[in-house]
Image (cartoon, one colour):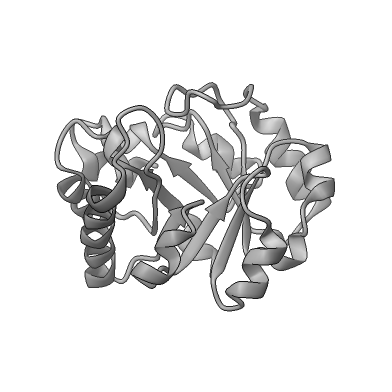
Length: 204
């Protein structure tokens, strides 16, 4: 995935929304997001046919605007939706197996510390999600914040690795994450809870 698509990376599932997810995604795209990840997980998340129906609607919006559509660790959706990419965590499906099954798929992997980095087959992925940079309430199971230092260390160790900072990022601190070496920032609540989504995205 070209690095330009990582610049303003929006993550959302129905559980994150106080209003229609399709409307929120559309406004976010119009505001300038560069990629979208569908993450239907946690309390209140949709399941079964309801999840598939919303996923198809969001996929259609992304296709209309030519925005990469990525799913979060939901392998059953890869074939059903003809997705552009998948993002997985350290304990999700193996990146080796994913790459073998889907040689042309964009694959992102979460990396939070040096041990995880050591265990990660970086040659098989297209970018890493580094964080949580700041404390976050969007994921109940989120790890302890690793700070800007982790972004800096990653960049120093891997000068050309595409890096997306994630976790607690808002329009007020996004510039710092980019300054220390990230190619882009990934956000959830900064957009889903914004009063003016287009303005918020433009400030990220």
